[in-house]
Length: 278
Image (cartoon, rainbow, N blue to C red; front, top):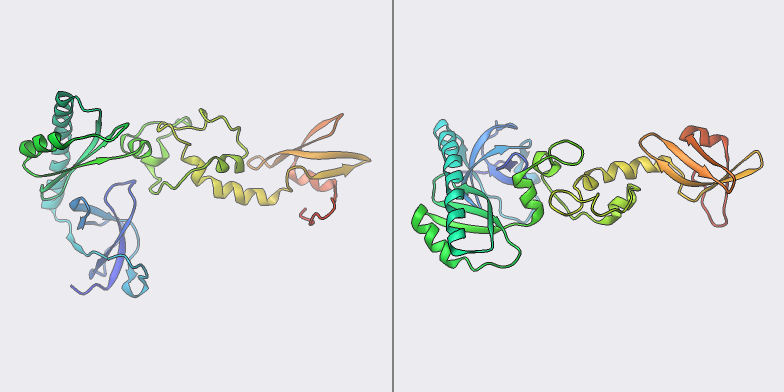
């Protein structure tokens, strides 16, 4: 096969996209394909537009798409989902028998049934060698036990967030980067860690994907601490709301809440070595 294009493929609706090479020039977003991943032969979905292979700059090996998914492939895929659910039940029984401190949360068969991947959570390292022998004899295929973290668990299990909507990680957020408390500070949130934590026990994902919006909206506002004067009174900017575009200014005698546009009626007191911004 002569690879002419590369394209992003997802193997789960909210999973990360991976690039594969292809000679099929008519693939479009939503098409089902079969490709070889680290979990074996899998049915995936095209999640991006075709890109000419000449533009591929990564040094990573570009594996090829094997074929379009046939009706038989899709039937086998659906059947494997049912088989994986049964494998989860059996795995849980065997784990309890061996008294292992681990909890399976997801299972997935390769399309050809040659491999079963079981994701699990555990506080510490687990010696599962005996479990592997038992499961291999029960399922007659290669078994991979893959430990995942709390964020991955929340993504796989799903749930409803404090906003009342499905968890971002299990609904649309495919790439979860590191989320630091600095993002909460940038969004001017109260640093209450329990309230800022999600189902996974870590900082909520929306701190990540909303951060750029807050950074952009804050450009319309003068820096906190800026001093303003009107009618002989001097006020300090102590708070801003980038969503409602309202600012809070105050001095020892008075607190005022103003629309951002009204702040232009005030004269900004320029401090020494301060660059004009507003």
